[in-house]
Amino acid sequence: MKKEQRIKNALSVLFTLICIAYMLPIVIVLFNSFKTNASINTSTFALPNGDTFVGWANYQNGLTVGEYPFLKSAGYSFMITILSSALILLCTSMAAWYISRVNDAFSKVVYYLCVFSMVVPFQMVMFTLAKTAHTLHLDKPWTIPVIYLGFGAGLAVFMFTGFVKGIPLEIEEAAAIDGCGALRTFFLVVFPMLKPILISVGVLEIMWVWNDYIQYLQGSYGHVDLGAVMALIMMSIIPIIIFYLSCQKHIISGVTAGAVKG
Image 1 (tube, rainbow, N blue to C red):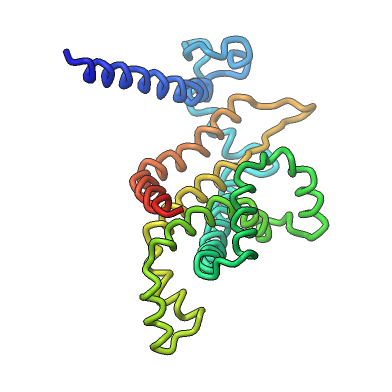
Image 2: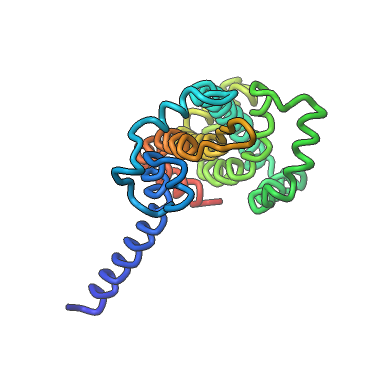
């Protein structure tokens, strides 16, 4: 066997083991979602058996128990995810177009601030953000997308800017000659050409916002129904896993396109 082939085989085995390691937490949560609360505490990593298996009881409890049942919480999450992603795509694509075409000192500062925001940990700003959001009355389900716009702008502007730089300027100049203003040029000429990167950024933002979903489930005297929580975790991650597997090719193609001249 050639040396290159041995290296490829070794890398394949390594990456397979890494994938298995990443999948283990999900598998453990899946097993625990069918177990009793006592067995989750005492035998977290054990498979369900005749004494610990409770069937679909945890899923039924997760759908009906709590101040905010799963379906209501998932509905709010779906609304916030769609509105946030749409707002991010619209605003950041326009901002990236401005940054790419104007290219003055101000636009460069805005661009680098967006890039810098990508590396700022959420923990650094979460307390200030919560206070500010409460003061400005932005802590409601229909106003939270404004918060997500600020956090999601960094990655989106970075990807859109790289893609816009690859669009020939002559196309926009021709639209200007035909009498199109800035807004008409963007929405009628530039925006349709952004379709590949729009899909990619949209998929990434939808996954990010949806994964912020947290189901709170607590009974009397502070007791937490761990079995129901495990069931809720599975019900909340399955949709996004299916969504990612269906759209992963768009993520790869869009990231590659946006990185050509980023």
